[in-house]
Image 1 (cartoon, rainbow, N blue to C red):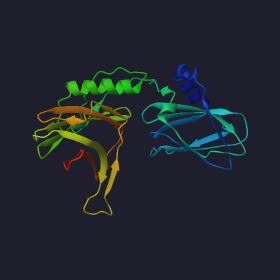
Image 2: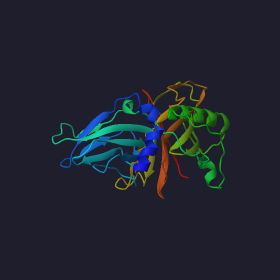
Image 3: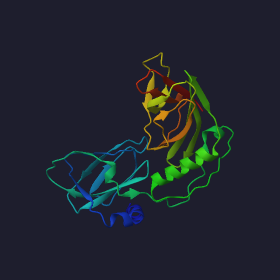
Image 4: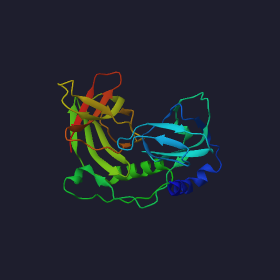
Length: 276
């Protein structure tokens, strides 16, 4: 455990040296809950006096903290989007706060990869066991990498997985690119309706079951961590391409992907279902 903590400390040393870390009091009598903006991928405490529990099998946004009397220590958290959070821990008999809702502004930086990233894999070619190779440069700021990677895919990726047309609006799911801890959803919308299309929202869901059988139907939204070139208005005659970056996910046997785009102040709604 100490070796892992030392390794993580090196990765973020430059970013934390000038920062004053927030202290989170805890004890053995009460459970302190920390809610993060994204799922917890990894967590390390610096002393056996403290424990931080989180779901490793099915990552969640929440982790539970407890401790016993002893020396102060620290806690490092890495989320599914490579965001790094760091806190000091101390034992306190009486706790004023039991629930912490962590804001993204509290992050101290982004994890720096220790090893070269794996080759990106496209959903459109996975069936044929073909790897889609694209150049990659690792950026200290993950959002800068999301931007660069999205730009590259829109320029060079010409795949088409499925499309849905309704009332002159054509919704294309171009591709799903799996890269490390994210999936890049490449989308294109064409407007041939004669009327400008102003988007209320475009959402991504994992769908399980049959909508007609409400008891077994599940629709779980996948919240993007980054949106590249997402338009607000698509004028008549225009075709707009953009990328939604979401935390990595996989499909069960009965699960499908759903893209849902709705018109603002209008009744046009497109739903595109796709199964690998």
